[in-house]
Length: 558
Ligand code: SF4
Image (tube, rainbow, N blue to C red; front, side):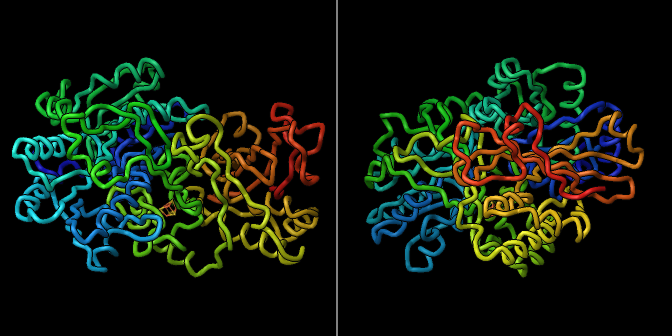
């Protein structure tokens, strides 16, 4: 193929989907690593033409999104200085910091300039010798060579008023960190083609071998992605786990040795904190000692600071592929591109921006008129540790959705009305992949709610939209008993309600007429040693162990 539109041919795309369907015998979950791939998937609806056994998980591949909040705050602090010209790629300007963003600094009189390359910033430094000129160097291996080139030129020419705020990250360590997570559900990767164009494919082979996951280096056009999925599924079905190169028209096995040498000359590998993923060893680049004079963190005394991520933004879960953007309670309500709460909603490669722009704009507009919860469940894993070190449990254990006590308050009648409204309005809206989910008859719902006596039980009901995340399980056995059933979706989420930890599960039945019904809602207590704060009808003492079967609650009967 020669022209771009040939890589967007609809009939060829459908043929790839048919080939994948013919090959697939069981469910597979594949993560695309790059935000550009995510945008193509959502924009062209590639996930919707794939067989339903194939789940595409969006990964932490947006460089703007994974830049931690503390770096945004540092950028804002530098940009606010009257003696400084702050230069950045355009995407970073609207990313919210703790209290402001770079565009607001510019509106307030700060000299913030959008540039297309770090060498543009170097030129600005040469033209403005009386000002400090700082370049915000973010991105993966793809942009690191250009940053290295600017650093090298600045050092060679002795440009004293130029420095860099460096937050470059490396893709393979993040993929390995995700695979190391105990509840990882990634079975294959589409690696980012542009990263491999620079770095080559060799560093992925040990990951594929160690974790037994196929890794297919993939491009960014629709046919690239579908071919990448096909190659990945073929490996999975054949029980193979090796690195393959779909993007061979661009990526050479050894990458670009000149760019690699440039990176090596200027940078050394270091631990780096990622938004939503926490601190990952050997996952970032920092300036070598001979270039440390260019380090803006040192020049402006900003090293070692850490900032807590905002609790209302679930970007950590989005970036880990644990939820889709529409499952964030703020999506389309309090978080829209004009007023983003987090980077994924504002970056051109952000997953939230992709869903808002291409898929759920209408849904989001509708939701913004609905009554939003007064408080949003917080993620314990998103709290920044005091030491500025590893972010909580994020990659080292089970992640819990924390539901604060005060989230659910008022009279029993008010709680019941709220629970009922949330169940009816939000579940299907937050999970469009499951379509409209019926929640049983009014009678059944009232009966269900009537059994709930304590705030924690109402919190459990409130949590139903939170637990319907993903996962589709359809077995022949299921279908033998109920020939009208097209699929059974089993979805689960870890919850922390008060001091107690639970694994919540919902089962959603999808019938062949297209209707989906929440059949069961289970709540397994998984920390039996902890004191129970409230007696729950979902969790009787004899069945509170996760392995001993559910203390089940029939959400509605079908
Ligand atoms: S929708 Fe907004 S608040 Fe939610 S995860 Fe995305 S950026 Fe954060």
